[in-house]
Amino acid sequence: GDSPASVRVPWLPWPHSSAIPVAMPRPVFALIAGALLAALVHPCASVGGLSEQQQVDQATQALVDGFRDDVRQRIQSRGVNRAPTKWEVKQVKTQVVAGINYFVKVAISDGECVDLRIYRPLPYTHQPPKLVAVMMNQDCATDVQYFEPSKDLQELFA
Image (tube, rainbow, N blue to C red; front, side, top):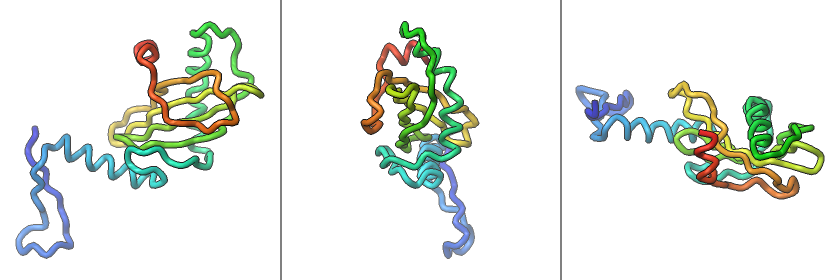
């Protein structure tokens, strides 16, 4: 239930116990611990703020590659009948929340990019990453920015 959590701190000089009672419900404690874990897992981003542009590494490329078919389907669902001729991650920024939001600019042709918003939950949830939003017709020369998914897209692609 929502009983207080106990935090073990073995190096503190309490005479009879190394547990410090923390008077907060377990879900709140888990959320705080999760945010701290996310900051440790991805130290380049401050909690809640958007990071600076990051180097595209193999892990990020693999994460984005996993959504190639989803992006193609979303593009075609909007009446565009051509498939991406290219799939190259150009930029990545992250936002640490209760997990990590990835804001990614992907070149899908020589002159066209899409911006993706991908949410990766914290590891302890055992949930897969999710493609949250796709912004089409983006300029490949501009930086990827924070964006909210539009209401219709949330309902369409939830």
